Image (cartoon, rainbow, N blue to C red; front, side):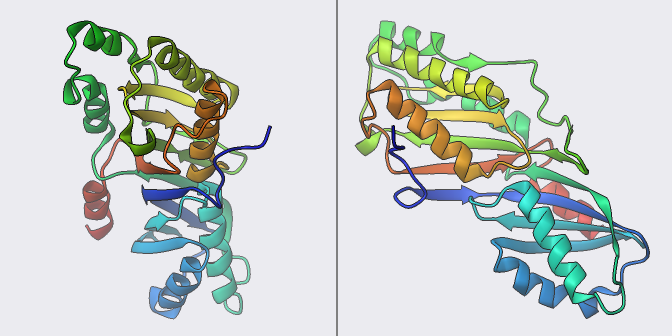
Amino acid sequence: MHPLYTPDNTTAAYQLNWSVALFGTDEFPPAGKWLSELRAVAESDGVRILEHHIAAANVAQFLVSSKPYIAPSQIVRSLKGRWQYLIRDTNPKVFRRNYSIGSIGEVNSDVLANYVARQPQNHPMADSRAQERIEALQFHDSGLDFGRERFSSHGRFVHNLHMVLENEEGWHDTRADVLIRSRQMIIDSAKKHSWGLARIGLVTNHFHILLSTNVTESPDSVALCLMNNLAYVQQMKPVLRFSYYVGTFGDYDRGAIRKILRS
């Protein structure tokens, strides 16, 4: 069965920000010799450097944004590879293999989780029985720690995503069986792909989903997987808009990270 939603026909609204730490085998050269060029070439990879700070002689920290088709592992590869090429003559092997990358958002995880939890109250149903049914279908796994670092072969990472998927033309689907099967499909998809699913904020015309995923998975691939699985619930009909929102989040918001980098 061919996917209904693909990178070619689906657009994204997004705000994807990351705190990245890279570690050197020796002292990094002064930023004036490479930073402006690194900004330009990294942006061609879909990675934009917003802030930069040398925390120690061999520790560099970055605040970056990225495009949805870029996985966190690709962000690290872009920064390290492009930077190494720029300083190859004076520092032919400057980086250690380890790294750290973490997702951050406009607000921290607690604020966002409370917002998603209140979706039924933010979009109340006129019928009290329908409202009770919607409230009963919310999903919450209190055991998932959004700040817990996970480990790849060479680095540690936090990759938390906030997805919003909306029905085509904002259409309200109040059918209990469809809502139940859609909820279960999101849960099953997370289990199949080893995603940490924290919350589903489900109402009759859209879904909010908070999950933690792997360092090699792009936000775009996660969103399209969920959208096609939800379409499968309804015989591969295009019930969702051919668009989605995805944002990153973590224990710290962007303001806190900027303050740390500038201090």
